[in-house]
Structures are given as structure tokens and as C-alpha cells.
Image 1 (cartoon, one colour):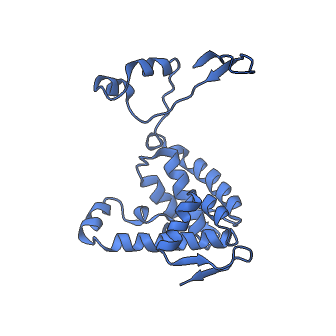
Image 2: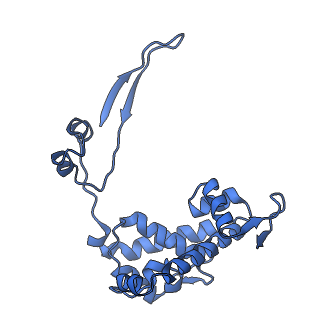
Length: 208
């Protein structure tokens, strides 16, 4: 949507007319939300001059191989690793997933896998824990073994933080960027997992 807005004179400032493009995205049915009184109708009509319906990744899984190659190459360069691609079984696991988070979820999954892998090819064990469970059995596993998934996830998180710090040479800001979290959040997780960087100038990861 294109808006024209005039900036009023304030002090010694001169008025200026600016063109503003407003782009908004949502995964909600806003028309239904208006009917349910959970979204303002006037705001909807201000935003909906041009509507683009983005297809769900689950409905277009034929593009998965192309997206996988692009994202693997991107994260390989970001992490400084020589990653050639995914194993056939890892590709099968990704093809069977429903991708409720669409491309953003795929990006997070392959970013995690690229950080975790010690090989030149991503395998199933490099994927996030929730994708390593056999299809259709994730809920059963959570019911039958309530404590283990949390323990495994905590261990995966700890290892992910260690590898991010090692990749970043102990620099917490760079490690936080690699993990896509804030530096304060990283510090919280370092404390949570009893990890610290001994010397900011000459960083060495210390496991307590």
C-alpha cells in the first residue's frame, strides 16, 4: 500500500512529503478474525489493497530439493564448513515432514543441521530432535518417555552452543548471531549449561 504523509513543521524542521510502502504478512485468516472480532476491520482495509496468497511448503514439496541445496550452501559458507548436501535418508525425513512453519522452519532446521554436522554431508542425526523420531511416533514417544526428550534436547542445545562458540572463536556476539539469539539470551544459556569463556581477548571455552 502506498501512503502519502506530510511531516508537520517542528522547530526549525521543514515539512517533507514521503512515500511509504507498507508490507504486512500473517498466517492467519484475517477475514475470519474480523468476524470473530479479534482483528480490526478498518485496519484490514487499510492493509489489503493488494493481497498475495503465499503457497504452503507442504503443498509444494517438489521445491524442497532446490531449497535444501540453496540453504545448505548458505549455511556451509556461514559456518565455514565444506557441506556438500544431505544423505538420501535425511532428504526422506524432510520430505515426510508437514512443515507447519513453512520455509522459515526449513531454514531453521538446516541451520541447526549445518551447525551440528561433523561431516561433509548432513544426516538424520544432525537434524533437530523432533525430526529424528519416526513419522507418526513423536506423540507416542513423548507420552511413553516423558523425561528423555527434554534431556536429549538440553544436550543438543549445549552441543549447539559449544559448536557456535568454537566456530566464532569464543566471540559471544558472533556466536549469538550464528544461533540467531540475543547476546543476553546466549549468556543465560551459558550459565544454564555451566559454560563460560575464560578470557574475552583470548577466548577459550571452559566446560565446568
